[in-house]
Length: 463
Image 1 (cartoon, rainbow, N blue to C red):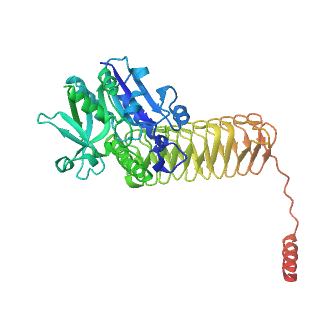
Image 2 (image 1 turned 90 degrees about the vertical axis):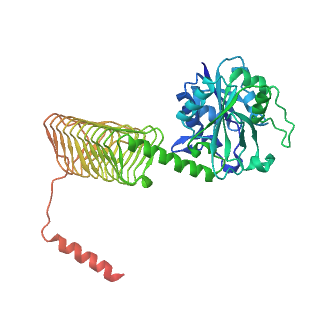
Image 3 (image 1 turned 135 degrees about the horizontal axis):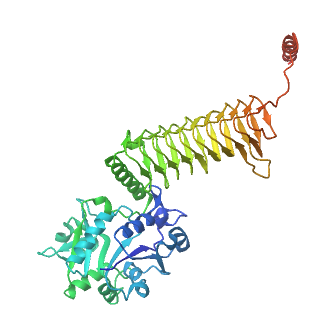
C-alpha cells in the first residue's frame, strides 16, 4: 500500500520569541522539521508534503528537494492546513501520515506500528495516543467498549468523566488518504476560534460508520510538541538520552553521558571510548577502538579506527587510522591526516594533507600544504601561506626534516629527504637530500652583555 506524509510546519511559533522560524530550531544539532521528515521517510513514505507558512523560504531552503511544499498563507487551523495538500495528494490511494513539524521525538518504530495497525485493519483513521497522569491541556481520547476511538474531546469541552481519562491525542495520525480528504470537505469552522480542526475529521469518520483506531505509544516523550524554549530544552534532553543509549547499546563506551553531547547524525564504531566533555556534531563519523576526549569538539569530521583525540577541536577534518591529535590541537576545514600521524599540542592544521607517519609535535601551523610520509616538523615551524592577498602552497616531500622555528615562505617546496636547519626562513625550494640553512651567521661580542645590563639599569634609575 502506498504511504504518504503531510508535515504541518506553517505556524509562526510566537512563544519561541525568536527570529528563527520555530521548526528550524535544532534538537541535538538537527532542525526539528528535519527530524520529522527523516522519520517519515524511514516508514517508506513515497511522497512527503510539507505545509509551510511563516518562514516558508527558510524551511524550503533547508529541506531542499527532500519534500514537496504547499504554502498556507492564512493559518486557519490544522484541518485547513492538511486540506492545503489536496491538489498534490487528493487523488492518491493509500495511507497518509499527518504529523506536526515540531514533534522531533516521534520515532520511526512508533510510526511503523501505527501504520501497520491502521493498514491491517483497513481503518479510515488511526490516532497516535499517549498516556500520562497529568494530561492537562491535551485532547482526551474516548474509546468504545471494543477499543476503537469514538471521539477526541478537548479539555475545555470535557465532562467530568472525560476529564478523568488519561489517554490523550498526540496530534499524529494515519489516514486512509481518500477518506481523509473527503471528510475534510465536511469540516466547518463553527467554533470560537473560527478555525478548521483536524480532530473534527475523527468525529465525521465515526459518524459515517468508519473504523477509527488508536495506537498508544509506550514513550510519553514522543508526544512532546515544542512551542517554547522550555519544551525545546526538554526535547533536547530526551533526545540526548536516546542517542547516548543507542550508541552505548551499539558498543560505544560513554564514561559520563551527562557531559557528553552527540548529534543526531553522528556515527560511532564499537569499542570507541568517549571521555567527559566530548561534543560530536554534524555528519561526524568515528571508527572503532578510538579514544575521544576529554574536552574535545568534533564537527563534520571523519575519524579512522584506533585514533586518539585529546582536548582538541576538529572542524571538517579527516583523521587516519591510529593517528593521535592533541592535546590542544585545532584541525580546521580540509585538514587531512593519514595513518599513524602525530599532531601534538598547540598545533593548527588548515587545508593541508599530511601523509602517513609524519609528525607535527609542538606549537606549529601547517596551512595550505602538502606534507609527505615520515616527515618531522619541529617545534614552532610554520608554513607562511598568505601574502595579504593570495594563499600559496607549501610542499614537503617524504622523509624530509624541518627544524624548530623554521618559516617556509610559500610557494616553496622541500624535496624528499631534505634537511632544513632550525631557525631558517626558507624562501627558495630545497632540492632532494639537500641541507638548507637560511639564517645569519652567529657573532659573539665579548663582555657586551654587561654593557647592555648597565645601560638598562641606568635608564630605569632615571625614571
